[in-house]
Amino acid sequence: MEDNSRVVSGVDLDSVDDETFLYQLLDSTEDFDQRKIIRLRLREVQAASRAKRDEMMKKREQEREDAIKQRQREAAEQKQRTLAMFDSMAKSAPAGGPKQMDINIYKDGKPGLNNDNRPIGGGLQRDLVEESIRERQKEAEERKRRILSSYDVAAKSGPAGTIRDVNFEASKKNGANQNKVSARAKFQQMDAAVTKQQGNKTPNPFVLPLPVIRQNASQIKQTILEFCQRCTREYKNIDIQNFSTSWSDGLAFCALIHHFYPEAFDFDSLSPKNRRYNFDLGFRMAEEKADIAPLLDVDDMVLMKKPDWKCVFTYVQSFYRRFRDQV
Image (cartoon, rainbow, N blue to C red; front, side, top):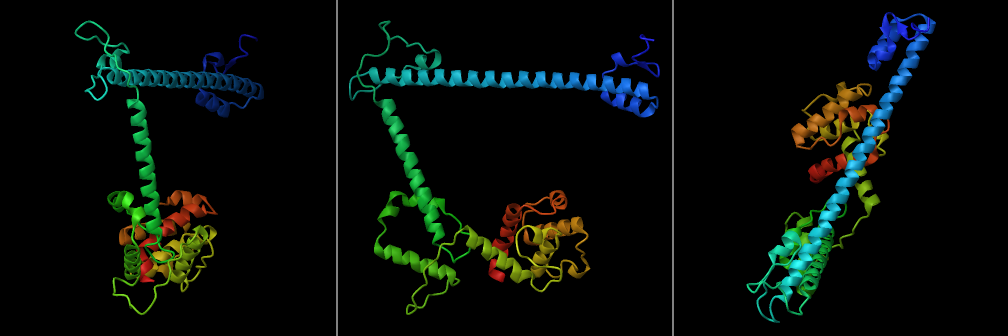
């Protein structure tokens, strides 16, 4: 009896490690005691599989840690060789004279020899590396200043609520001179901004331009929400109050693109129950007609009853940038 305690339907369970086969055997077995034995073997196989996976994960984690430590050691060694190379170069000639770079230090960490079989070196100058570091820090600060200046100019270059384009090339050309803009140049920049807002028309010299107001994140969000409401106010079953639940059945996306391309499809034939069809139609029409990239996935939107407002807001911004001048 004990010899047959691990045998079910002629199968020696101790020799079976396949969970799928054990599940199939369990489904085809009706005897309670035999099913109990199969379940016991299943737990043993699953425990062995978990132990094996844990061991593999520990091994891979250890290999990753060893690789990271090895790269850190190599980086430290390379740093020491580089510093030794520059130090040797700084010592290889008197002040003001040409420096001799010892490549052997960079390769194997040992100094090379002169023609007299003496180690390269002999000067007292050790400031080349420090000077190089200071130059890099100075360049980094200058790039940071130019980038911040570009964002500041972009924030002042368009009407309220618009998405600004940051011109980094202009900041590179201007360089440090941006901090020394004259009063006349400032007024010229203001005139150019007003001209751009008025569609490149010549501004009225007797009308003072309104100051450009920089909107915060909530104001921009409200601006785009109002844009969507204006475009969809005449559509049935559409009531956009947010960037989440108002878009959950896909009709809002269809109405938004249908507003600008009314001949693309029959909106009145759509139903809020056909969510997958609505999402697919709205995203596809936006891409084909307006060249708006489908940033949202149909399957993800179908699974979510309450879509992530940040994802919807990011996608709808593409409509705003594309059609803001047509509303």
